[in-house]
Image 1 (spheres, one colour):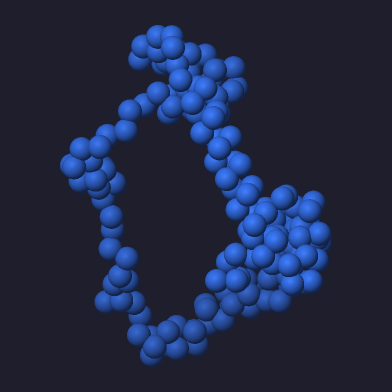
Image 2 (cartoon, rainbow, N blue to C red; image 1 turned 120 degrees about the vertical axis):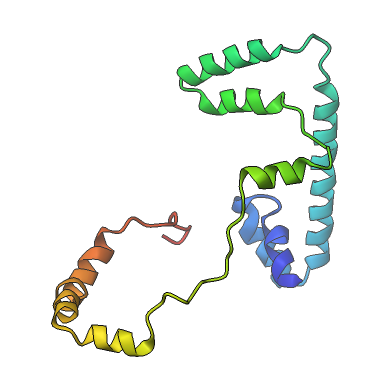
Length: 164
């Protein structure tokens, strides 16, 4: 539990205050961190409830054709996120019992179990690796030099962290 709660306790005030929060935790003042975290969560919830109460629309909403035209104009102007928001914010969610079945029919799930009937056996793999063609491919493609050059050209899959 502590491993899941510690980032919340330390980062509740933002990443700039994380060191201060960490020092409080190390001094044994975790109950103070807990109370601050709960207080911030309640304040954020109250702010969200107030904001959603103020956003009650008193005017008429757009028709489907007006929404479509506006979304297309925004998309052509390059504001894709706002166009997406306008289309998605006005859509009604289906709450009928057959919604899940309709979605599953549109995107059928394939089996996740591997079919090993057509895989080569261990003896066939050993025989294949002893052939001259395979040895040539292995020497050309899987050398240390080739692997090193490939790894240098790979794009990083993650962003750099705070430590660099």
